[in-house]
Amino acid sequence: MNTHDPHQPPQSPGYSVPPGWERFQAPPVVEPVLEVVVVEETPVMPAAAPLPASAPSQPRVSALGRMWRQMGAGSLMLSIAVHAGLLLLAGVIIIGTQVAKPPPDFIPAGQTEAGIEASRKLEYQVSRSHQAAIARRQPQARIAVNGPSLYNLPDAETPLLPETGEAMGAPGVRLSNACFNNGSRSGPGLNGTATPAFITKLPGTFEARCSSQSRLEKLRQNGGTPECEAAVSRSLAWLKSQQNADGSWGRTNKAAMTGLTLLCYLGRCETPDSVFFGDNVRNGMLYLVELARKNPHGIVAEQPLSNSATYEHGIATYALGEMYSFYRLGNTSLPGLREAFEKGVQVIIDQQNPQGAWTYGGKDAGLPYAYTKDSRGEDLSVSGWQFQALKAARHTGLKIAGLDSAIKKCCDYLESKQTKDGGFGKTNRDEHYNQWSLTGCGVLGLQTLAHNKATPVKKGIRFLREFLTSEPLNWERNCNLYCWYYYTQAFFQAGGDDWKFYNAQFLPQILGAQQADGSFKRGRPNWPAGDAADAIYRQCLCTLQLEVYFRYLKVADRAEQSVFEK
Image 1 (tube, helix red, strand yellow):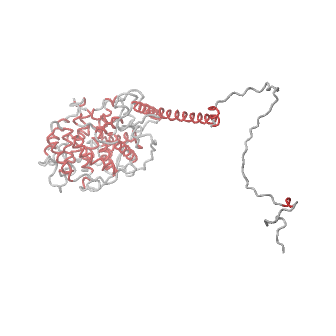
Image 2 (cartoon, one colour):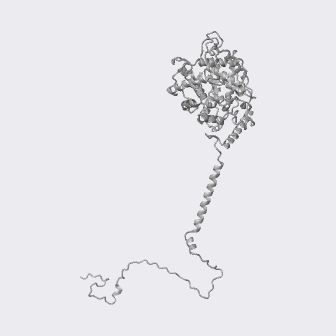
Image 3 (spheres, one colour):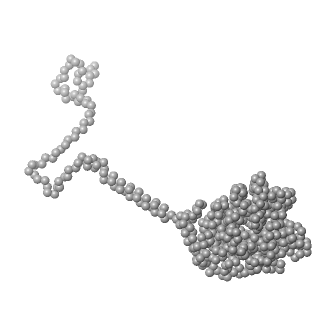
């Protein structure tokens, strides 16, 4: 059977293609080849036909020009121009922001002139606003204290201006209106004019308190930090919230607690004219004045027969004396202040015993007050607050009979209390008033009241330094804040390497104990009498120590004799 495909030509080499069979052949298979042919067409125009008149002649373009166009020159130039414009605009904005940025108000190493000027302008604005508020305020009624209060009314919350004052921890703006620009003695003062007269005539030892710039400079010079200033601000704000309705502070021993609190405010130049604390200071002062007025013997204490009244009277008189130093040459009327202070100092002078010290026990001796001037005993702890009140009296410049004699007798007594070890107090550490507890008190008295007592002072500082080298200050082991209060002042007055040694111990302990609300947590003492269990008492002792950097000048930095001592 023939299986040959009729559509294919015979394959045998012996066959030939019959005629007509070609049309039935399949076309040959050809591999496709891609061929690109570029044909340039040149339009053919009649030779005689002229170019239209409207068609301009085509300019000749160089090879470089054609290459530039092929690279997209127009788009590139536009992009470059846009980016350059954006960069220029950003540069103008950044430079303008830096130029317009005000200088910082506080620089740890010092202030710029522009910053100082900005601070002065802000102070002036705050001062004027405060004066306008005072003008609209109703006259303040005088507080009359008729006796101890059985109940304490809850304190109304007084909001502080956020982020504007030192009560919020901002060091750039002071809370004290009365003390603006004391450091420079120029610029707007309380009424937008010159610095208040009473500030410019303060005893020289107080001057560093009354200007934020001066305080920060003293902090820098004496080894403090800006955190000290902020910590003091938070502490004063906390104390503000703790004031009783009658103007006092504390629940017991209110005269002492009020006096200590006022010393804290005055230590930062917060007076009755201060913007944020003025009413608190004024009401506290009037509370003490009324206590002195109602007591026929001038004892500033609610219970004059109590042994603690000797402490209370000394502390309260000390506070009244510092207050009077701020206002003795001013025009502000503080009714009863001078009378209460002079009477309080006279009580201290009159009740000094023959040893040059002060003791209590008057009730047992049948006296109408706690002091016992005829006793043959002595009490270095009680005497410490009495000589601080005498120191305040010296600063006022008032002519008080017997003041100089009382100071001299006190210095002789202090020197007599020094042991062969160099400490002040009893040599048995198990006894109540021993030299490990009260040497700071004895040294401070000689430093601030006596003349030419360098030798006993150095011996006392050496004793304390050896003691604190073996038993460093520790909040959780030996937090005897009553002792620390005197240690801090004594080492500060000593200055030099002794102060650097002590400052490195004490400052971290105090700053580390402050809590978020501004109060200080209770430490663990190893001498019960040195404890500060009462919250107000603890707060004041800590605050006064933090103010040591600027509260008083060092003895070595003072003039030989100030205008108040001539």
